[in-house]
Length: 250
Image (cartoon, rainbow, N blue to C red; front, top):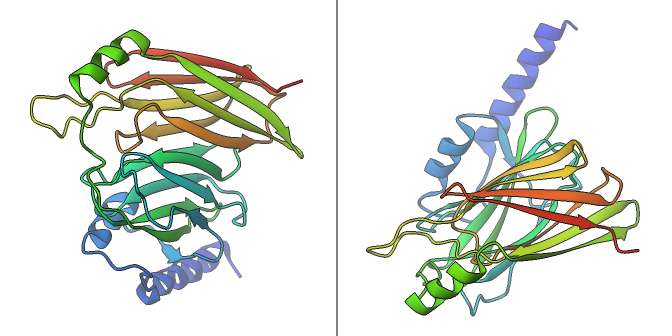
């Protein structure tokens, strides 16, 4: 079979997958968000291979812990997360160069909402995992003036830990930052928008973030790359740059 014919048959098959796909959690905004994110690329719903852990009920809508594991999908190239009904639905867009598809972080939610994790495999097919976050909402409200003064003094302070986990390294860091949404009158967005992970000169991942991430972000991810010594470089929406160095515990 010629490569052109093979690709044509594959494309027809993927179109068929899209046409028969059934959204496991309906929301009125999902179709538009998916179109704006994937621009017509082929996809399938795949909760069997994407684990998304969320609280049974998010008592604190400003700090909703999320755990994602998409390692059942081989050769993941990219991971995108969004929350359908958030005022800022986009959460993160991750390019995996030498990073495992395992992440944990916390987000804000404005109301009960589905959360979606889109995972691109080596063939360009997007796998979609879904979970529902139950909450009274209101997590997108901004900080008080007293908190703003505290952030001015502590902005960029950070801590990190790297541990060996079987054949991989688990990297966890937190950084003091307001991650301001700008949704309240008289405030401006102020958040960490870009992250890159390095081991010496090797870039392992690149991430685009939004203010849907909770203030004082804490993130965990895993890599099989590098030698246990890593650098996390971050840039916020005001062009401030931060650098976190971490190495495996001896």
